[in-house]
Length: 149
Image 1 (spheres, one colour):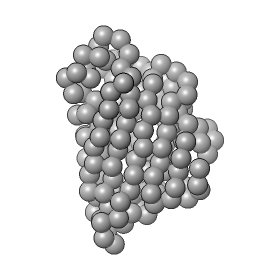
Image 2 (cartoon, one colour):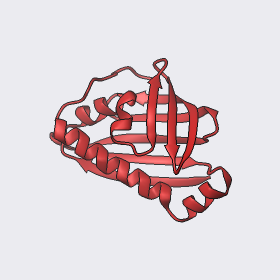
Image 3 (cartoon, helix red, strand yellow):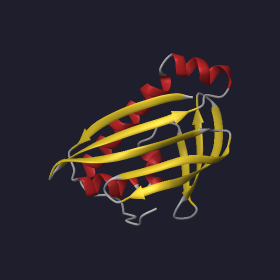
Image 4 (tube, helix red, strand yellow):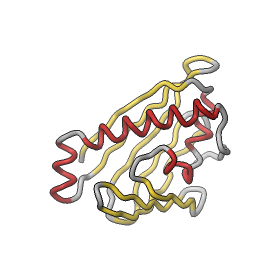
């Protein structure tokens, strides 16, 4: 298993950052390689990705969700094996630190080489930067799911 830990500060209140992160179907707008996400239930999402020409589909289950604090997940079906958590930390009324921690199991030679070269770390850093740009340019979230899991 490999680990990634990344964080970024965003210039929006914690509730805005959290609310946007609960809108999984909007992830393709700021996550590179994510083609589509379908929210199938409150706790189950279906992902379609294409990275370096390799298309993958998998399901992920939300294992913990606490409004304005955290969203944790693990994959449950498909070729991708990962688990992680995104936490939201109030810096002040208008700023939030978003922290991503993820464990993943690279599959095959290409993914193992990419992992060793830091491609996943680079990609997650870019995704967080695009999330920052996305939410700051809007100032409001597309929606919100405020339930607890």
